[in-house]
Length: 262
Length: 108
Image 1 (cartoon, each protein chain N blue to C red):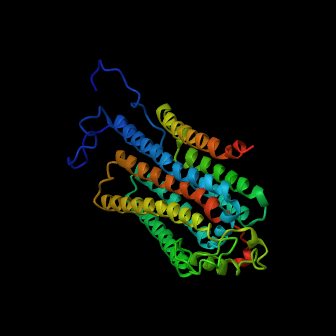
Image 2: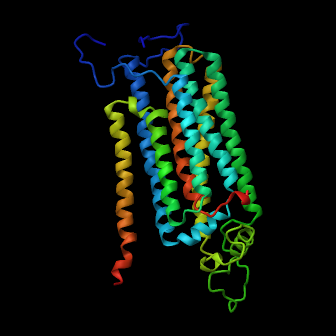
Image 3: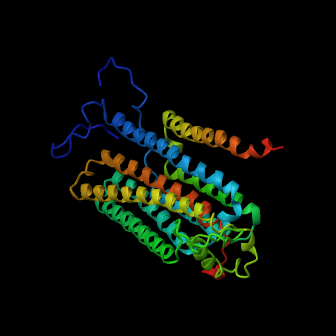
């Protein structure tokens, strides 16, 4: 793409003064995002590593706790996020070809799909809260002489048992014998921590897409060379999708789910 | 750029963004992989389920990074950055797990 140094109306220059030309600037912008994403991989890597340690130590407890989650909402959210990545990629193409109308439409679609994801996620958190699946130290039976072998002292354990007894796999209670329900709180610490970090990243991404939509409305992307800013935001959004791709099997699909439970 | 200045690593034409057709094809492939991930998640594969789950997730991650994020079109410096992030994460997992996995052996 040809290098130009000013916009069509002579406003803000396209190439910043510290770059030699537009190609060098575009490559620097792109590389900056990749460098940031490398730090993000390490950031999430630490959390996934901690999860792996405890998952290896307590596989049955993690499977039981995961069964209590709602796989249908997770499935819907997977498709919403996937579609939002699709529209984000189409936005890059629209900016590259200078199609301002399509650019705004694709940015708006990405925002709507991202907000829909957060809506379902909020509903899921609300459901978990209503079922009492919040890891806390609240004791269900304050009598110290009354102690269950497989851990049933916390209110959380009673709530989890109540939820699992409605699931097909644990209906007869046989599989619950090997599970320490108190310890399942550990899984929920990871569940809220990991999905919470992912939600924060989504909120930041949606905020940036809204900002780019406003910029697009003001004609910022009329010089086609600026498509690179849409591209790097889409890179970030794809990374958020990547994190979800691993959260789905490790948190939601670890448990015993059947289509009859839906 | 001054005439006497040598071209530097960043100054070359970058491949254009994916066309609408290619983007749609990637989307359809990812839809199929997501359906597969959910099917595996709802299946009863026993201890193999986690490996099947992670296998599908790794294929999805490969498609997203190579084609959606267009890593295949990036320069060597970007490849080095992506590889470094994977390498250091692998170091993180390797050193941590060599401790936790082998703790049982110390007792014998």
